[in-house]
Image (cartoon, rainbow, N blue to C red; front, side):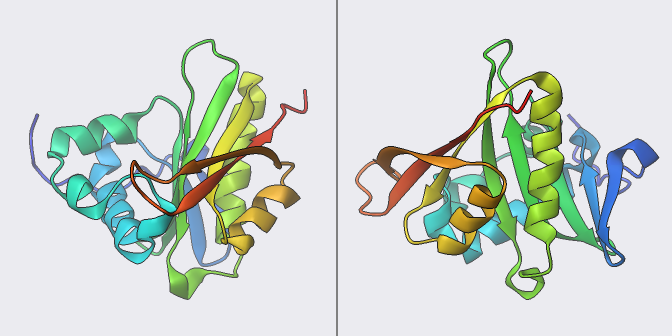
Length: 181
């Protein structure tokens, strides 16, 4: 695959939603891999205990890996302030399982508290609902801001607690949201 820079994030009207005047949400495609890579690496650097992936491993991925991940399966929503990606979230939707996995939710610190995360989450949940999927996620224990966001959107704790990574003392709790349809 070519490593030429993309022409920028997709701007198709069907791929956009505004959470507020200065923030735009976009369901991205493989053409948007550079914006995805930029925001994902910032997320991993800012909040290493919130993600199973590590910054070093992600930074080593070839452009083809970033393109493939940006393409799915399932939508990947980036939040933009102007042309800068400031947040993200993804929904992994395996074929015919009836369950989707919410992953990679993050908003840059300067943009937190403005409804960006809620906008990204709502966009992803709309997709899950349209597919008739229940949604599962993991949240780091102690991240009460994220937990409250998920609870406001219908998620409940399952009681399952796992290590973030093999050998990690950081714990993640599983939460689940039933499809409302």
